[in-house]
Amino acid sequence: MPIHYGSNKLNYVTVASTVASQLPHAVGAAYSLKMDRKDACVVVYVGDGGTSEEQKEVEWKTENKKKIEARGRRSEAENIRDGIERQGGGKE
Image (cartoon, rainbow, N blue to C red; front, side):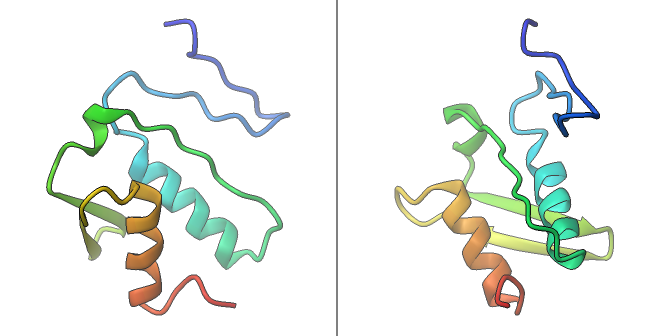
């Protein structure tokens, strides 16, 4: 695939072709940046196929899974943000 590239120098992580497989990695990377108090962000792209399920699981520790309910036409980012805030994260 033409988008399979990466760069350590530019902090570009190589993407996967599997639908929505990069969501847990993106959440983990974002959580790591938050914990390290880095002034950076994580961007993840997900198409219609990746958001067609009723529930998503966000896992940043094997023993600590967070379920996020899909709510109508809300975006995946809104659901992830709300799930993290409900668990006490995401607030400085």
